[in-house]
Image (cartoon, rainbow, N blue to C red; front, side, top):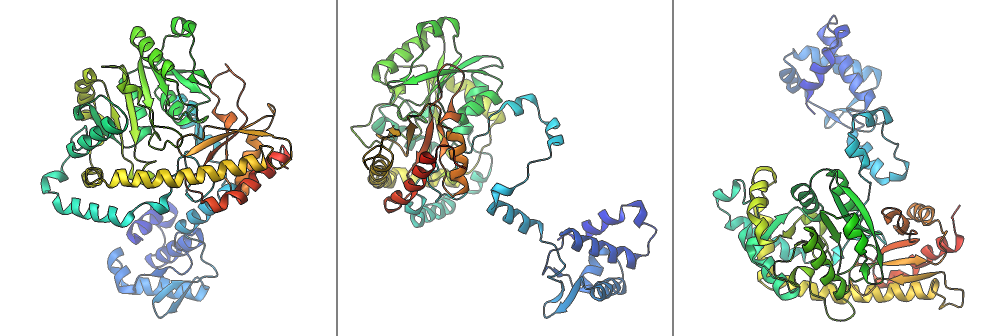
Amino acid sequence: MDYQLLFSQFTANAAHTRWPRQRQLHECLRHAIRQGTLGSGARLPASRTLAQELGVSRNTVLYAYNQLATEGFVRPDQRGTVVAPALGAPTQTTRRATASRNALSTPEPNPHLRAHLSRRALSVPIYEQGSVDAATAFTPGVPALQDFPLTLWRRLLERAWRTMRKAQLNYADPQGEAPLREAIANHLRVARGALLDSSQVFITDGTQHSLDIVAHAFADAGDKMWIESPGYLGALAAFKGAQLKPLGMVVDAQGIAPSAADWQRHRPRLVYVTPSHQFPTGTVLSLERRLALIAQARAAGSLLIEDDYDSEFRHDGPPLSCMQGLAPDAPVIYLGTFSKTLFPALRIGFMVVPAGLVAPLRQLLSRSAPRGRVAEQWALADFMHSGQFSLHLRRMRRLYRQRRDALVAELERQLGGADGQAAVADVYGGSAGMHLALRLRDPQANDVAMSHWLRQHGLVAHALSEHTIGQRMQPWRGFVLGYAQVPAEQMAEKVALLAKAVRLGTPP
């Protein structure tokens, strides 16, 4: 607590300047206690210490303390003078912690303050990517954090810090650290069939940061861009934040399906796709459509944004090569992240850009992008070069396949008709990744109300209908279910709660 700042702010009030110092300090401390700035059990400084800090006599402090004790606001104990627990309001820290534990009762922000937001900010959709409690089923995008080799990661970080010299404390390379870019390039060539050199790799703070860069660097306000529908709302937020005009393109069993008329009438500057495991439906973009998209984008002068966010986890059949590697110098910006393969708090992602765009993008980022976290990048490069990254991926594939199987079995048993009741839902997109889609057969089902009810009962199941972009199609009704962080033995219990919400229709 900065008591000098507290005291100066209180005495800045003209009404308080006429009071004697003793009363000023007494009223200041009493006001802080009543407002919760000094919370229950807070220890006040020793009288000599506070007198020296405020530039007043010790007798002034003793008077204030004695008066507060007489009024019952403070009491002496072995630690000195502390705020009485019965009268002190919760501290700001305590209030924040309480609010985070009871998010459903958090009051809405002051509506008058929204007037200060720009129209651009107000147009950005709100999308909760993950949950603060990573163990909450079925939060999408959260890996099995309990199975990450944290002890090994600590050792790699310590080694990186020991290796660093003072020069590495300066602003870093705008493209990221060379060892990590080389490790990523090697991995993508082997695991994803990419055609690239490490000079084409740019390290970012994650996929959302990559999307922001792409939206601002390769398009202007008002430009048209395409996004899958249903689609990833985080990408929609990035594009709307850059004042682009997104157009939702329908997704079918083979992925995004633009027509020839779309290319003629709504020629896009950017096209955003998730070909390996479409979010949220789980559809895999067919090879025929991948090649067609590349050819059509090249002819139209468009750039394809390939978000390959969880391609590492292919459960059924061999992995599919990325779009970026299907044609030499394809007009594809490839996005990847370590938030799903390792852990979200790492905040490291990457972009692979066509060779002709490297120099201008590097020049742009040298003036505008954050540059740092050298130790984390070196540790990650070590993790990849040593083979530990590949080993971790193999372990996670086995674990996620097991959890996927358990979830699908319970969904089929409780909602798919295997239990003798009529089937009310179908599973989509379980062949890869860390999530699947449960599509309800009732086209009028209120999945938003069900999702809210489930959240109140401790289960996260994002409504599929909220991922619809544009008016081209009837919304999918159902849920996005992330299973990576849910142990197989808990699936029956979690799905039972989900089935209860579905059977009730619109829960009370």
